[in-house]
Image (cartoon, rainbow, N blue to C red; front, side, top):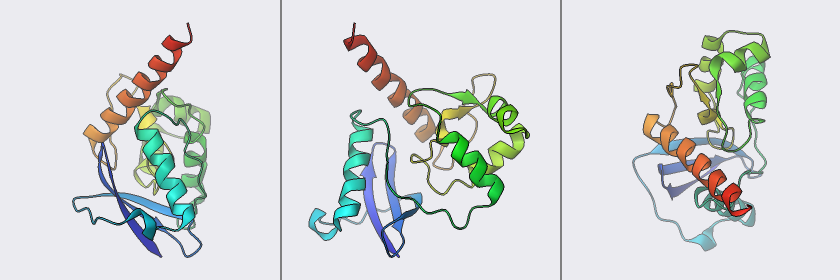
Amino acid sequence: MQIIHISTPIGNLNLVFDKIFNLIEITKTDELKTEEEGEFPETIKKLKTLLDDYFSGKAFIIDYPVKMDNVSRFDKKVLDFVRQIPFGHTVSYRWTAENLQTSPRAVGQALKRNPLPIIIPCHRIIKSNGELGGYSMGIEAKKWLIEHEKTTLYKLLSHKT
């Protein structure tokens, strides 16, 4: 297992990889260990570039190999569904639950256990009344991610006219 630390606009993140560099977990941390770019294997450099591009508004999809061995079948079903929500869009827990034939609470609990926030964009799920709901990296991070995606998408679409 290898852990790298990166600084992002939503805070410092730990990226945890298995021995063949599949991403297995992303967590927020208060500490940031500085690591030289040259210390990373090429595959990890690719992910770091994808994340930098995402946070700077240059990438909409973070396509990187992930491994979710410790996720239940139900959680995987929810997370696979959430992965299909387009960049810059939000949907409700209720809408998600109806599509998966389960309850909004069950969806929320599965998202709470998401080991790969940002990669699996659970921040795009909000309450039916427009409130944000919860987020494993904190409400401020969820708010920032939603606004970042909507602003990036708006800028992209407004430049096409």
